Image (cartoon, rainbow, N blue to C red; front, side, top):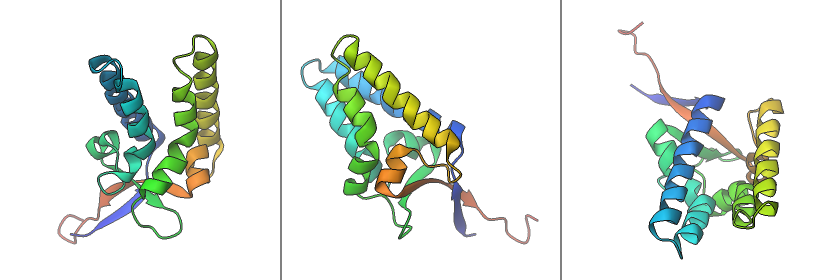
Length: 143
């Protein structure tokens, strides 16, 4: 049996990102002084971990790969693709201004993802990455 990849669906991508944000929120709550910053660092480098997978993507079965080489996402690509969300999250602690900024950044990311023919959000466009889902090919016996 061999594996191939296909572009990840929107729902799976959202679910994986929600899991990552739960992890970030837990870090911020458990370690109040540094947890927020640890969560911010995790957000930036998360897609460069575990062979191109954040914890959320690892649990869901998704992977971030380079558009040009097809290799798993590097730390540099992860920082580039998550920079828009990181910028929003970094201002989150500012009442109203930060909250509005993260809402606008998230909305722009989502709208670009919805409008992209290749299923790429702003961060993917910046880093030249794709999110893929590993799919198992059917063998002759299964068909």
